[in-house]
Length: 66
Figure 1: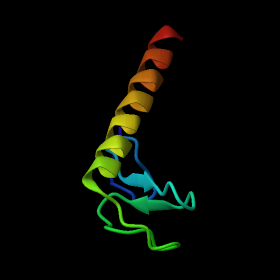
Figure 2 (figure 1 turned 90 degrees about the vertical axis):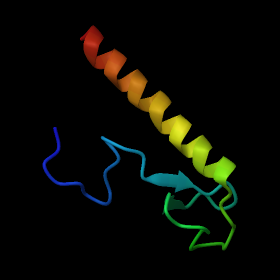
Figure 3 (figure 1 turned 135 degrees about the vertical axis):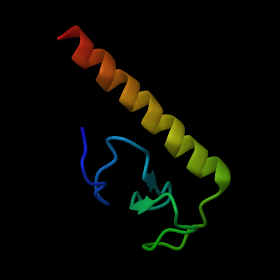
């Protein structure tokens, strides 16, 4: 359980989007990549959220099996 929400952590909620152009990690709140300037669309952001949910579910399932 988290006591403080840290910027570099995405355990409890999705915070990051990965740029498809350069591979840089950016915050979901940003509208473009700071490295290459690619604009993030709402579809890109929703994909990042869906990917986070999938990873989270896999992590929870894995911990339940241990």
